[in-house]
Image 1: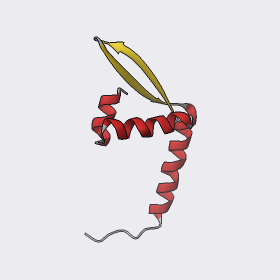
Image 2: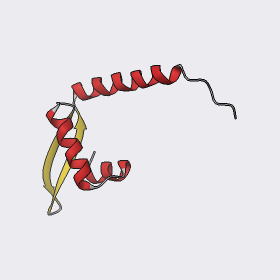
Image 3: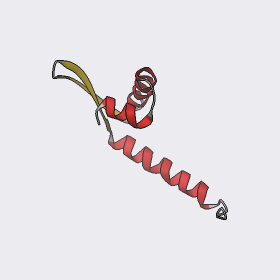
Image 4: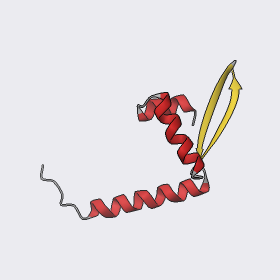
Length: 74
């Protein structure tokens, strides 16, 4: 996913997203690819295999937590 699109989705500043992506890249969870396109430097972000496994485990843990919550009455 292109950096600008991800920034729009998560609604944070460039600097906040860059800092978090750098930490995730250092941990091996995301891969960052930079290239010039249309005369501008662009960055693309993708999950690595380790990142995909970590995300799946995190989502599973969150589901286990909320499975024990009572259903709210409407």
